[in-house]
Length: 263
Image (cartoon, rainbow, N blue to C red; front, side, top):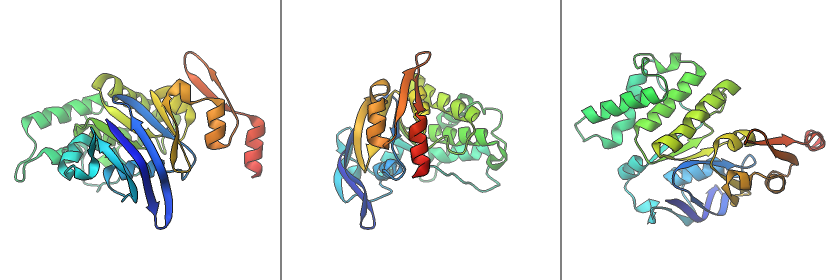
C-alpha cells in the first residue's frame, strides 16, 4: 500500500503540492488527472525521492519511504518519466538488461532467471524478435513499448508512469494503454499514471485521483469520480459525461470551449 499524508513539495518558495493526502489502491490502474501545473508529475517524483518534501510523509506498506534503502526501493517501485533518451548504439536487449541492475550483485550480471524475465517482458510488449534492434531506430509506438518493457524488467510491484502516451497518435495511445491495463489486470501490478485526456482515463483506469491546486480533491472508482460536477470543480470547465458501450465519454460543451478560447 502506497500513500502520502499532508505532503508539501515546493520548487523554490512556491509550493506545488500543498497538503496533499492520497492512498493508492493495490492492483489495477490509477490515473492522476488535473490542470497543468497542479502537481501530478511532482507527486510521482516526490514518491521516488527525486524531489525533497517540505512536510508530510510518504509510506510504502506503512514504512516511510525515506527509511527504505534506495536499492530496495528500486525493487519495489519502477518509474517511467515523460521523456526517455538513450545513446544511438544501445540495442533493445541491452536497454532491458539495464533494468535488472538493482538485483545484480556487485560483480555479477543477469542470472538465468533474469534473462528469462527479460524475454518474457519483450513478449508481453510484442517486441520479442527485436532485441538486436537499436532503440532509437524503433517507431514511436515501438519505442514507448520498449521503455515500458524496461520498466517491467525491473520486476517491481508498483509502476509510476508520467504521461506514457505523450506525443503518440491515437492508435498508439490506445495500444500502449491497453498494454498498461493488462499489466494491472493480468500481472497484478499497481500502476499509477499521469494522463491529460479524461476520455483515456475513463477508458483505461480503474481509479482516478483528481488533483487541484496541489491537493488531491477527489479520489475513487473511475465512474464515481469523472462526473460533470467534479470536472467543473477541478478543471473549471463544463462537460457532458455519458455512457457509451459501458464506457464513460466526456464531451466538452461548445459554449465552455468558446469561453476558454476567449480567455
